[in-house]
Image (cartoon, rainbow, N blue to C red; front, side):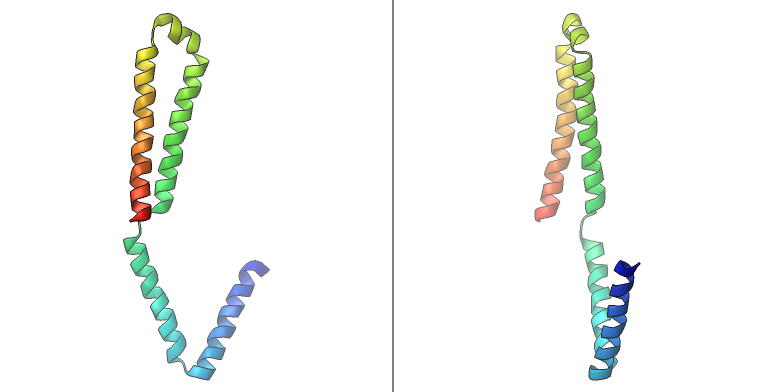
Length: 109
């Protein structure tokens, strides 16, 4: 409770003190500017949370496919299924790498 209450109390005290020294226009201008900048950032920045979730999903699928291959490696080897398994794993890896490249471009542009 104190971790969330203290910042709110600080905010109120700061606002009241600033308004008493500089007038009400100063804190309203600051908070208006903050709201405007937040809206612009929300509208222009990529959805980093969704990108991270998608990355985790693709990594999980890739690891799961590897785990399934390790579990069934004798059957795959005996039945000659190495080529289809390799294609399936490479396709999953390519989807993951494609997503990572896109995320990196969005992060550094």
